[in-house]
Structure formats: C-alpha cells, structure tokens
Image (cartoon, rainbow, N blue to C red):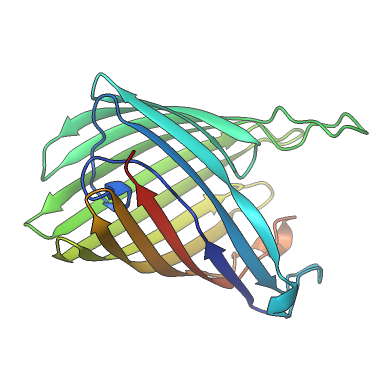
Length: 252
C-alpha cells in the first residue's frame, strides 16, 4: 500500500504584471512590452511506490521547479522560455490573444519541449522532445468573479513508443476586496494515452491571493494530488500527496 506524501512548496514565482501584480488573476491580459520572469523551488517529503522516498519531514529534499521568462509584443503575441517541463529540460512557446472582451476572452498557444541534455557518461538523451497546443477561454463575471477553462493536447516523442496527453484545467477566482481574493484550480489529465494504458492524473488547488500593493502580491495555497489511476501499469509512480505553498509576484 502506498503511503501518502507531504510536499511543501516554497518561494515560487516572481512575475511582473500590470494590475495588482496580477499573474494570479485568472483572467488577466498582458500588454505590449510586458516582460515577466519566474522561478521557484519545492520541498518534498514522504514515501513513494519504489520505497525511495522520505517518511520523516526532516529528511525531505528541495527541488527546483524551473525558470520561466516571457515577453509580450504587439499587444496580442507572447513568446516564452521555461525549464521544468515534465518531459524535457526546457521549452519555448508562443501564444496569441484571439478575443479580449471582459466577459469572454480566448487565447491560443503552442509550446515545444526541447530534450537537448545527454548523460555525460553514456551519451543517452535525457527526457523526450514534446509538443503541445492549447485553447483557453476566460473572462470576468460581474465585478468580483474571474473564470477560465483550458484544454491542452500534448504529443511526446518517446521512442520506441510515442504517446499523447490531454489535459483540462478549470479556474475560478472571487475578489472580496481589491486586496483579497479566493482562488481554486482543478486539473485533470489523460496521460500516456494507450501507452500501454491511459493514466488519469487529477489535482485540486485552493488558496488566497493577497495584493500587498499595486506592484506585489502573494498567493498561499494548499494542493492535493490524487493517486494517479492506472499508474501501476506504468513506470510513472503514483504520488497521492498534499502540498502547502506560497507564490509571490512583483512588478518591475
């Protein structure tokens, strides 16, 4: 039987924005000339399927979550670069705003994950090249509620057997005041579709957003990742775990 893992995520993201350091806003729009950067780390502890995890919180490990940068030009286009991809060392991306109404917005995006690192001793490639494309709808309802839904398709070049992933992300955010909001995010993924069986990956994240000023905000949260269904048929380990974390953003 798998034991539950506990994960504490620390100082995660610092990204510039236009209003209320609003990278946490579910339905924000970047503007022409806006540059953003992000980075983070996480602390994990707990047992896993292989028995190599840490049961004692004092023996946990700190992992980098990756670095990301993005730049918006001509108002509607954004280019990005990030590390920490699930299947590759880094990825480059491009997104385009199709509709920008307050009540209904639509974005299209695509990313390519570059597996360019090799093992120095064996010369074996680490990770798998991958491509994903997303369509995201989002908007503002009334004066206080923001919503979003995104569907992502991903193809992973994993020789000798390539596979598809399909993901759905739902987000909701309610502002109690200009400085305080509640935020919920739900993720559902069909992973390694039919390779050899489809995995079902689910998580939910609930937290608060505090706008400390027009240029800084913090987002403490709790996240639960459900046991990955069908993962016993794959090399992917189930990770039925909790995460406590905080994200930060600043404008510069």
